[in-house]
Amino acid sequence: KTALVWLRRDLRLADNPALTHALARCERVVPVYIHAPDEEAPWQAGGAARWWQHHSLTALAADLAAAGSALVVARGESLPTLRRLIQATGAGECHWNRLYEPAGIQRDTAVKQALRADGVHCESHNAAMLFEPWTLKTGAGAPYRVFSPYWRRCVPQLAEVPAPCPPPAHLPPLPSGLDNLPIEDLGLLPRIRWDQGLAGTWQPGTAGAEARLHAFLDTAVRDYTDGRERPAEAGTSGLSPHLHWGELGPRQVLAAVREACGDVTADGAGHFVRELGWREFSMQMLFHFPHTPLQPLDPKFAGFPWRADDGTLLRAWQCGRTGIPIVDAGMRQLWHSGWMHNRVRMVVASFLTKNLRLPWQQGAHWFWDTLVDADLASNTQGWQWAAGSGADAAPYFRIFNPVRQGERFDADGAYVRRWCPELAALPNKLIHQPWGAKPAELAALGIRLGRDYPAPVVDLQTSREEALAAFEQIKQQD
Ligand code: FAD
Image 1 (cartoon, rainbow, N blue to C red):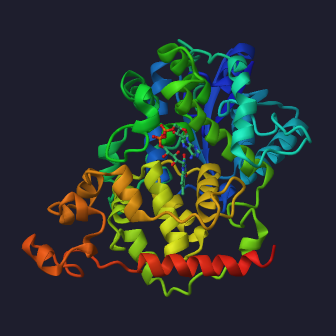
Image 2 (image 1 turned 90 degrees about the horizontal axis):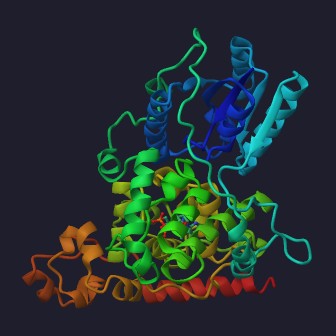
Image 3 (image 1 turned 90 degrees about the vertical axis):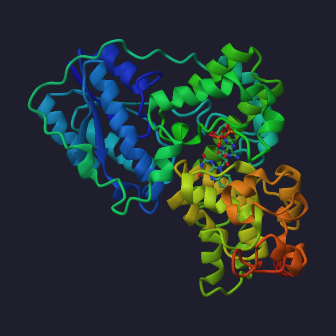
């Protein structure tokens, strides 16, 4: 018997239930990747994510080859492509791991119905979640909308999460004569090569994912609670893009944390696993509220009086030229490496939506195109949270002061100095607010605001008051 294993965002051999089940049931297994970005519209992978995908597929193809198989790569609509491959291989089964985004669910449901009608045995599996989005509901049977009670419900069940299954030692060879597209032909790499920063930061693929996981467990996990708040340090795992593409699954991460630390509910390890819980929570929010990538969960925010901008402020934010050092450092880290520290993501998102008063969707779109870990559920949740329109949102009136945030979490200015080198000579007391210096003081350091580094594009105090006034307007709708 032959089975197709349709790979999408589960680009790994270990703990891949679609692959394991197919191997348990069939002698021949054909791993297939079909490039069909239109089926994910309007959320096809952005520029940085496509770079990642190219390298991740390349790494997977090498891993499959080392195990005796190969990756069949095709392009085109999924259903006709699967049907063509089923015919070419004589497959009677098709296995895949589930996606939870609205477009993926719709496409997969249609494919399953059509193939079953053709007489093909179709099975979907869970590779990506500790708890699938429909498994946990409140006492009243509704989806959770607040993280803390959701996570309290999850914690006791962590012990029951199945152990990850090991990678197959050998895979059966592919049948001969199958068409196979070179990964280069998918056109995932940028034509203008802006990707040196990504290449210098990341190693997409399972080997890179495991190296990051073990480096984190060997060093940072114990001090995670404090370390995760210091953007200048490698205090977090850096696993987000690996998890997004499924080069590593959450069951594997949980098992590795348990092995390294014992208890997965306390101390640094417990805090880290709780962050994985945010990933789960975000996915269940997207599953139950599929309109939220574009519309606010709290409907009164639909009428929010955003600032009329001709694009100038948005561009300043995107390019890391707002004149607010911690914001600019974050936006430049994002552009260079495809990633930004979580604390700084919260600061730049608050600055965009509150001080600049630009719609959170504009920020979410920029992140979507520039993050290597761009993930519809986590990105939507992060932006709605920051804008105050989400389920578990910070109240709108709690507006981050980027200067205080910088002073608190980047006290010695190391993060700002790294990403805004033109400010490196400033003393610590000025590094987060260069406009607080006397011009002569700056001149003595060879810095002129507006020439070497922008003057702030908005006044923090005035823009804060304007944001609060705007919020008062929509609050009347309560
Ligand atoms: P660690 O601190 O090591 O955490 C471990 C894992 O837990 C992460 O890899 C991630 O999978 C998960 N996680 C941690 N924090 C969160 C969180 N707040 N929400 C959901 N999952 C979390 N994360 C994405 O993966 N993709 C996104 O597109 C994304 N967009 C964001 C947008 C905004 C405005 C904000 C505020 C946050 C966003 N996040 C997003 C969440 C978070 O910033 C990243 O997951 C985290 O910075 C990744 O770094 P890490 O792997 O070192 O995290």
